[in-house]
Amino acid sequence: MTITDTSLKTFLEIPYDQLEEKNLLLKKQAETIAPKTLQKEHSAYLLKETQIKAITVCFTDIEGRFHMLDYDKKFLLESLENLTFDGSSIRGFSAQSESDLRLDIDWTSLRFLPAYVFGPGKIIVFASVLDRSRQPYISDFRGQLKLYTDALKKKSDMSAYASTEIEGFVVDGIHAEQEYTTGAGFKLISTGGYFHSLPLDKLREFIDRAAEAQRAMGFLNEKDHPEVAPSQFEMNFSYTDVIRAADQVQLYKLVCRQVARNMGLTATFLPKPVMGINGSGMHTNFSVAKNGRNIFYDEKGKDGLSKIAWDYISRLLNHAPEICLVFNSSVNAYRRLDPHFEAPNQIKVSAIDRGAMIRIPVANEKTARIEIRSVAPDANPYLVFYTILKTGNEGIRLKKDEDKRPRLRFLPDNINDAIRLFKGSDYITSILGEENKEKYVSYKQAAADRSPKALGTRVKDSEILYHHEVTNQVLWNMF
Image (cartoon, rainbow, N blue to C red; front, side, top):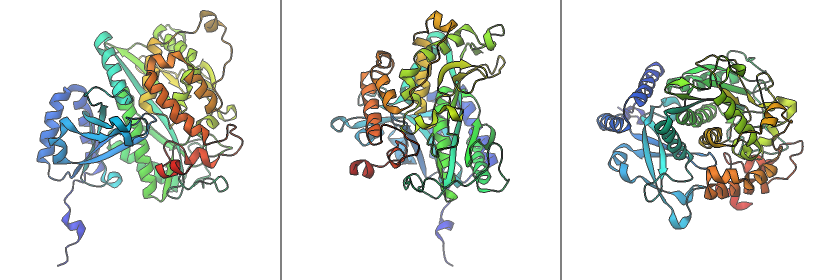
């Protein structure tokens, strides 16, 4: 008898319906069981479970790139206090002379994975980054967001919640971004539009496969559909606390990219990959609760929002020009802020105008929130939520006369202006710190310098090939 490689493997493969049950149970446990207790319970399970071969540990750099390491199960459990990695190999992390950083596993984030997307026998967990003295690393904004939310919870029993509406495009071919040329551009796989796609065409098949995987991972998807532009998609998942919401942004994009690759396609989250049609955004719905009550809601307030919510809005609008680089972090992002395509480039708030930076959705006591529409899908979600939360709490309100008679202002229409405003801002220094500010500016400026200052009417090779989610070390060193 011939023994095949497949017959030798007994790695964990869980059907999607059971996978969803397991992940929703993990989510419930994370909300009700202390982290230290969870660590003991999950460690005991992993020691006993023989069909798990590796644990995928994830973290995010300052620009928002997603990094993953696969640890042998036994090695990880034996080395939890000293999971080190070379931080100098990660753009925006430590210098070569002080390269060692540590990973601190967040056991509340553990999830079982669909074998179709990640391969059999794996689970995934997020980690925060620690410095050599085991303190939260200054440039890891997952850790910084956790520090800030923990402090708010302890001081005022306040919790922040978010959900994102992430749009993307599916284009033909594998590595379509890395092989982009201005002349050929991207080849769209669908010519349909909003809600318009045949049940078994490529776009609908991609959406179905990606949404099935996300549901199995406990995302609690609400709706999945083609978007306004041809070959564009959006999959919406439920509201949750800001750290979990940011984790889900990273997993959402990862799942979409891998599902597309399995189909011989590329899922891209470039904000404006194709001229002449709508770009992609990451509309960010945000609210704050205190003692379990949504404090953004006031039945008698303007548009159903409380004074606290309106203060958040006022501060975000006031600081909009200088925080724009956080929300729109690439050369390509500024093509999306085009008023001809429902662009949210006006620094104002509106319940109806989709050109406004902030929209107020129709809501009730449970769902009252603000929607920041100017966020691009390639932004670092942890840095975005951190900036929204800190600005909403600590920023400076608009002057009263501007509240009453606001003058129409616009967000920067190119990355160079956004960098200048960010760089010259004392407010940015106060919320991010000088070191993070300098790091972030240096990487954004390096990308900007590789593209023409004027965007022009065609998407350029440089804004794709040197994009922070696309590029590789070889390309940067060949510039």
